[in-house]
Structures are given as C-alpha cells and as structure tokens.
Image 1: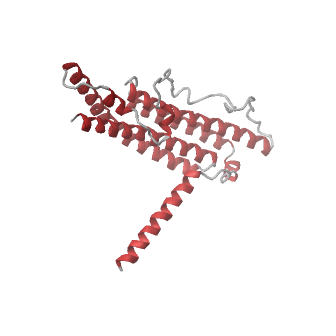
Image 2: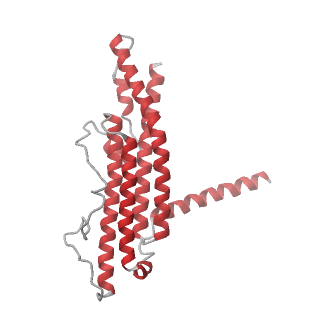
Image 3: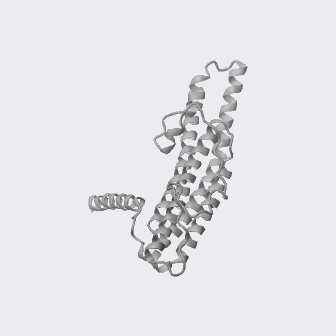
Length: 246
C-alpha cells in the first residue's frame, strides 16, 4: 500500500508539473508569434492559451487535493506508528522531471516571485534587455525610425511573456512543494497578463499597420516547424498503416 501510494504521488506530481510546463510553452508560442508580426497567429495562440489554461485549472484542482490527501494520510500513518520510513514517500514528489521545471527541482524553493497584471503591462518604450529607450516617432518620422521603435516595443513585450512563462513554472513548483500558492489563481493571472500584453502589442501594430504587415515573416516561429515535423511523422505512419491494411 505504501509503495502504491508513493507511485501515485509521483504520478500526480509529474502531471501537475506538466500542466505548468504546457501553460509556459503556450506563453512561449505567443511570444514567438509576436516576434513574427503575425496577427492571425497571435490570435490563435491566445485562444490556445485560454483553452489550455481552462483545461489545466480544471485538472490541477482535484489532482492537488488528492496529492495533499495522500501526503497527509502518510504523515498521520507515521505518527500513529503504522508506517516507519518517511523518506521514500516524502521524496516521491521530487523526482527528475524532463521538462523545463527541472531547474526548479531543488531543496531550497527560494523567495516567492510576485507577478501581477500591472507588471505585465509596462508603460515604458524600451525593452528590458537594452539600456536605452526609443521614443515613439512623430508623424513625419522616417520608416526606419518607426521600424526601430516597433521592434523595440515588440521585444519588450516578448521579454515580458518569457518572464511570465518562467513565473508560471516557478509558481507550479511552489504550489507542489509547500502549497504556498493557489495554482488555479496562478494560471488565471497568467491568462489575464498575457491578454494585457497582447493588447499592448496590438496598439503598437495599430500605429503603423502597413509597416507591421511588411515585417511579418521576420522570425518564423520554431513551434510551427515542430508541429509540421510531427504532422509529417503522423502522416507517414498513417500511410504505412493504410498500406499494410490493403
């Protein structure tokens, strides 16, 4: 019984880590779509993110409840003398996870990182990665000046989305290890923040829509290439199966 419970803890832990990873991955996809100046793809990515978050919130709540129940039952069993070794079970929640959360599998969870919609909506005109701000060009500014400003604003928003993705991963780890955050609220906050960032990007595009269209294709998203690769593999498998059935 003890062994089966430990296996279940491992399964639940990995499932919840995977939920956080999937939300973070869709935030990364959204950032890549913004980098490519593809408005249709940005809209699609935002819809996909909303669907993933809705699904993740519905799944994480019962799984966390079951996980916490198993942990509490084991602790009660140890105190009552029915179980003698705490290590194997308590360590079951900390196993090598192949996803991006691996960097957070450590004994010290560190300080909590606060993230809010306000922080996801910076008012400045510069990317957090560069040292200088480029002011919004005037009406008679050159195309080059507008392009520079638009790229810098876009890069700043991409950076915010990347930070949001890492925050989701960190909060997922904290929700698992010490139950210090509510993951359903975390994912809801991530969705609101992503929507706020997309709204800012749309405002940038609206300044020079023709120029924005001309910049489309500058950075083809890697996640689309991966989807095409997977689709090709699936297609080959299906063709082989159809051929074998004939």
